[in-house]
Image 1 (cartoon, helix red, strand yellow):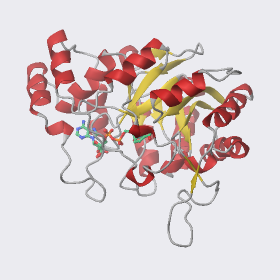
Image 2 (cartoon, rainbow, N blue to C red):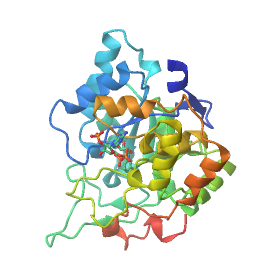
Image 3 (tube, protein in one colour):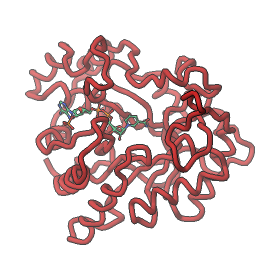
Image 4 (cartoon, rainbow, N blue to C red):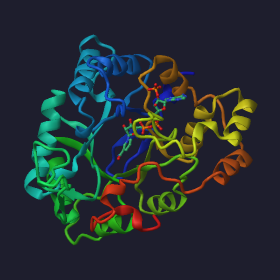
Length: 326
Ligand code: NDP
């Protein structure tokens, strides 16, 4: 398998492009110090050119250190690496958007990020200190920010050269529509990054985004981490699905590889997280086979609209995205 396929890209509406396979860097298990550096360096060495991160994940300093090390040793140039970061919920008010991005750049020690996305459409009380600011009774403090006002500052960050492309994450189609209908819209979101895997195939969102030339980036493509600290034992496990196993056996591939191939074959960007070299390698070995139309339909058929990342604690938020069907 050549690097050409691993580094296959999809065009973005602003004239740039995004590698279809990226490495997720969010470790639910809270990585031990140095673990992210090691994983990101290894990923770049084996051909990954797209890294998905966020201020929230608390390890952008290590991601940045790894990228800079791989540039310094000549493995890649800065322009070969596509790094995505995300504006956290406490930074949605227009006065804080640029601050949020600058904090990320400072942590990374990079001059720009390739893609900056609004992490969630829901604002929390502005704070540079707390990720989830609370009142004296421990109640999380919500903030109903106008997402169009947030978006206007995202556009100015692109104009300032701090970010190459701008997009959103976890927006429902009505929230996307609000941005697209902004009277002074300068740049439309290049992507919507959403949870997507065979148990939540997001067919309606994908159809909507395709019609607007917005790329879907699919997070938790393997059905998230199964860390018992947060994974409900009652949840179904995507990678144990018998249909994925059966199709995998035909192609001599794992259920994970089938779940990833399904997405890239329908034009969706995937960002599986692994900090394990063997699994990182496995997840990139999805370009040397093809699923038949019947197999694609069979994977579609196991959809159960099951969401792992529900953000249940925010169902009362006026901008909670998952009350709408898509
Ligand atoms: P994934 O669906 O990518 O699953 C990751 C888990 O699967 C890890 O526990 C990993 O363990 C394991 N794994 C990886 N490869 C394999 C394999 N081949 N076979 C079996 N197990 C495997 O979950 P995430 O929720 O981490 O999503 C991926 C990325 O998406 C995140 O890291 C983050 O960058 C992004 N994300 C964005 C969100 C948003 O709101 N925009 C929300 C959630 C995630 P190990 O490391 O040990 O291999």
